[in-house]
Amino acid sequence: MLDDFFTRALIAGIGLALTTGPLGCFIVWRRMAYFGDTMAHSALLGVALAFFFEINVMIGVFTVAMMISGLLLLLQRRNSLSTDSLLGILSHSTLALGLVMVAFMTWIRVDLLAFLFGDILAVSKADIAFIYGGGLSVLLMMLLLWRPLLAATVNEDVAKAEGLHPELSRIAFMLLMAIVIAIAMKIVGILLITALLIIPAATARRLSTTPEQMAIFASLLGAAAVVMGLFGSLRFDTPSGPSIVVAALGVFILSLLPLHMFLPSTARGR
Image (tube, rainbow, N blue to C red; front, side, top):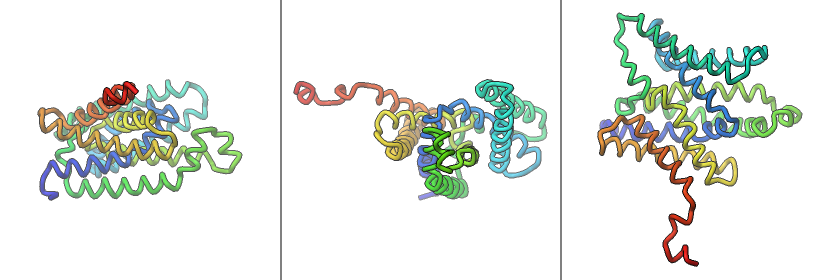
């Protein structure tokens, strides 16, 4: 079954969506979409450094994402610039540095479009094992850190008073983000990772009554977007990564419509 490229793409995409759901919820709750963009954009610098030092690309992306997270924490403590300004500087400078480095490495042929927009149809069995192994690790860590992360999201001072160490929770959250970005880069690409993290979570927020329910719904909606996007890509011959994001957007738009529009006319008349 795994010899078929489309089946491999479906399995890999669903595995990624199940992982990004709960993580995306915290991005939405903490209003950290710009932080997600910064982490994703830094991935290209990680790719360039991985090629330069001849190491695994995912290791390069993970390392740079963690370095950017640490640099952001350090600069935030100095209070010299607002967080959104720091994120803007780090986001665009790392993306530009990555592009410049790739341009200088003329001895290497790099398919930038595959890194920027993903190539889920090219995933291998080894990639699937990495996605599910890394995804399971992220979900287990999320389960262990759920209470301190949630408490720090609601009120950091209360979390600190209860001895839940919100600063450590923030570092752990950044670690999880780095892992997910390293996993997701090959599937949806650097420029679309944040969309897959945020859109299903934003959709789930409108349909949920508890944080746990929202996390589960976000994973399921992300998986549904992967399936719809891939079949749409196959049917209309469109790029697979962007098609997944468009499918997620379509589900989000549907969630904005009033519920009575989906009810039968007889039910609406009651």
